[in-house]
Structures are given as structure tokens and as C-alpha cells.
Length: 228
Image (tube, rainbow, N blue to C red):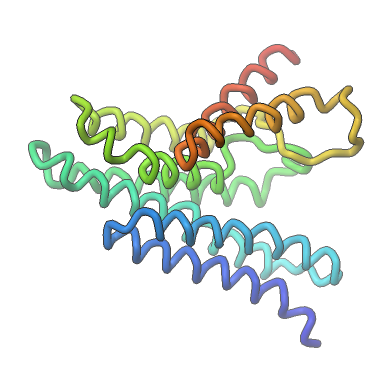
């Protein structure tokens, strides 16, 4: 049956998008790298949906999806940060930019945990890999030129790598934009998040995506704290 191959084909398109994003990242073309990460995210959104609609979900599809996600949302953003760090860390060890690939390893760990964790049906435990990828891609595309002029920018980026890696596997509940009902009650955090995304994008443009991801993390932590 042809239809059973459709979701895996979409997943492979996600993986190919991640490969192309990685190529452009190493070329220093961060705009195209971010574009292909976004394209990969679109394919990632539809592969699971199509599998459910066609009733052709399979264990191999789940494993393939994790592999594709680590390329597109783990390795590709790590390559962006690596390429960005190379000229910034010329006065440090030449090995310093390679620390960016720690995020790829923690992304793989996060995806493996997600496959085994049954608590994440209506939310996430830890930062989703697409969110981390969009944060770094949009931050460097939108603010990269300004950050290079800041003193100690390379140290801030390195600190960000370690914080992101920790957030990927942290036992922090983070909400997903899934709605059982469309009423305000029970969905307050989701609606507040969606409403505040609009001015952030209008004011900050591309770097607004990075601000949205940071706001998502802050709101998730606050929601987790006050709901206890």
C-alpha cells in the first residue's frame, strides 16, 4: 500500500531539510539555514498528523521521526552556532566553537526520552527540540550582527549553549498548544502566550521568534510553579 509510506516520506523531507539547513549553516548563510529549519518544522508537524489520519502509524516511523528531528532541530542549529562562534572565539581555544555540538547530543537525548516518556501526551517535559532550534536560528539571524559588537558576546553564547542543553532534558513541565476545549478556563496560559506572540513578532521581526521561545520557557516555568 502506497499510503503507508506517505508519513515516512514526509519525515524524510524533514531530514533532508535539516541536511540542507546544516550545509547553509556551515556556509555562514544563517538566513537560508533558518528557512530550511522552518521548512523541516512544517514537515515535522504534518508527518504525525498524516500518519494518524491514514491510520498507518508504525514503530519505524517513530524512530525515523526522532532521527530526522535530531538532524533538523539538533545538528542544524548547532552548526549555526558553531559557524557563528568561529570568528568570535579567535582569542580563545580553537576547540571552543565545537562546544556548540553539545546541543546536538542533548537534543538526541531529549528525543530518546520523549519516545519513552508517557507523561508527554498533552505537554512536554523539557524544551522541545524545534523550539530550541528556532530560538538559536532566529537569534543569530535577527541579532547576530549586533551581538558581535558586544563585549564578551562569545561567553554569553557559550552560556546559552549550556542552558539550552540543560533545558532540553530538564524535568520542567512545558505546555503544548493542544486544546481539548476552546474556552478560556483551563487554557489561560496558552491564550496569554498566543496573544503576546503577536506584538513580539511585530516589534522584533525575525528575532521575535527567539523572544517568543524565551517567553515560552519563562511562562512554562511560572505556570508549573504556581500550579503546584
